[in-house]
Image: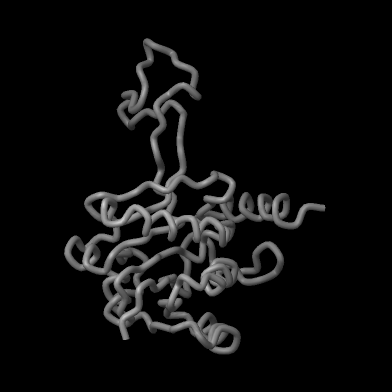
Length: 226
């Protein structure tokens, strides 16, 4: 069966920088991965949600609580932390067929249902002029490279940071792409991507312990304020 839009959420059992982060309690007590998963399964525009994992713990939770979620057992050769994500995604699309895919991460627990819907609606309204979409965070700050060369500003013309031309950081929260794009380019980002700007408070990607604590503080202040 070929779907129109399948959501992919890959995650490994082990984590090098934060031990067990994918199933660590976050915010209201749910494991971290369930925050994003609960968003995905609530969106009718997504035909199927598929989780790629090598974690028996995560698979067990999904089998008991999310019977409609497809589980993809990650092969041994793709389990190393240094494995490129595009390689994982190429395996995943061989397991569940779809015209388009939406990919996100369990480490983006503040991304809301409204934002995912906005991404889907924006992509399909822009397609095929834009062949892919990914989320970004706007930066307006003075950036320098490792050789102390200015990247996005002229030090002799000291503009206010808010007047600098914006530059965008790929925040890893949301990607939407056509199957053929990934197959042909070996990349989830196509030739003509659309940049979907996210609120920085929402676009928290948890890689380090400090990210986890900041995201929890934002969650406490915005989702369950006292």
